[in-house]
Amino acid sequence: MSIKNPFNNTEIAFSLKSNGELRKAHFLFKMMGYPSLVNFGSALMMKSLQWRLPVKGLIKSTVFEHFCGGTTEEECHQLVDKLDSKDVFSILDYSVEGKEEEEDFNAIVEKKLHLIKHASAVEALPFEVVKPTGIGRFYIWQKVTEKKELTTAEQEEWQRIKDRVLLLSQTAYDNDIALLFDGEESWMQDAADELIRDMMFLFNKEKAIIYNTVQCYRHDRLDYIKGLYEDAKINDFIVGAKIVRGAYMEKERNRAEEMGYESPICVNKAATDEMYNAVMIYILDRLDTIKLCIGTHNESSTLQAMEILEGKEIPANHKDVWFGQLYGMSDDLTFNLAQLNYNTFKILPFGPVKDVMPYLIRRAQENTSVAGQMGRELLLIKEEMKRRRL
Image 1 (spheres, rainbow, N blue to C red):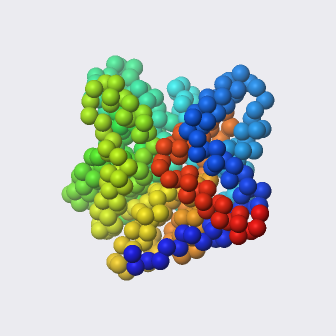
Image 2: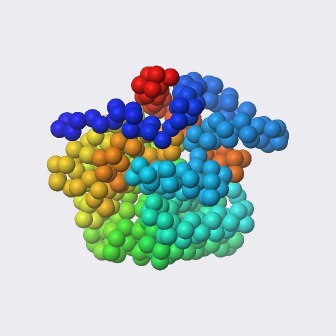
Image 3: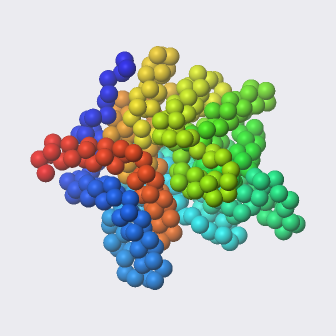
């Protein structure tokens, strides 16, 4: 590649971490190298919280502190300021999951509305993020995706979900804050894709306000993004796309096998990488119509994107291309990209410890299943510890 790999600079990568924080990160990533230990520990933590055992302090000072911004947005702001000092933007993600009641969905919407308005006053917060099943029951999303007839009560529930999506999108538009909709399981995603497309049609006329997440471990996602591009050209709107590899691989494969249908997931890691890069290249060739967030912890894909941008003479800080990683992971990418003037953000999950546990468990399990991820994190941490003579 024409671009020299900048990601081995551990001094820049871990410039915000104290010696103690670096040692703690070393311990956590070492433990996450053992999938059976992660699964056992996750189950034990959830049971301990359900039984109200005094473990919140332990969780908060270890895995929660490493992967989350805090329990409240106020707690997050010291971290937002620290990241901003390194030219890294932030996304405050109220990561409460697994709710089923209307009052819970309404409370989450109110929180998201507040965060959108708050972000409009803070330059370091250019985006807000919404999880579709955080504002409506998974069952309803699934039933609409499967095109099954809804009962009268379910039709009313689906209308409330659509109203929430519209309210959030309108508020994002009014406050000039980009809104990222998370991707979820394939058997509910079609309903979300169609609804988010409608929001793009309404609000993405001059710029990308609404973004959908494209999970590229699905083998149909290049076709999906091609169809969305053609739709946008015909109907005169801008596409916002955040591309990721995906977060539900084992669940997707297991369900397909149990229910006897073709798995929607690429056959292996190499095919997933190929799909991800194909989607990324397709979009980078069409930045006039599709605006891109490259959500990845993959060094190779990041270097390829940088090389394409350089080849097209697109400046690093071009407003139509962003790079993003999760807080607590891939600091080698985040901080070195920011140092090179690329638009870069960290997603900062936050919320009460008990409510954020499903997110933390999913993140830990996802990371243990990604070949090489933990090894690379550990290697870089060890390099920085060696550099600091710890």
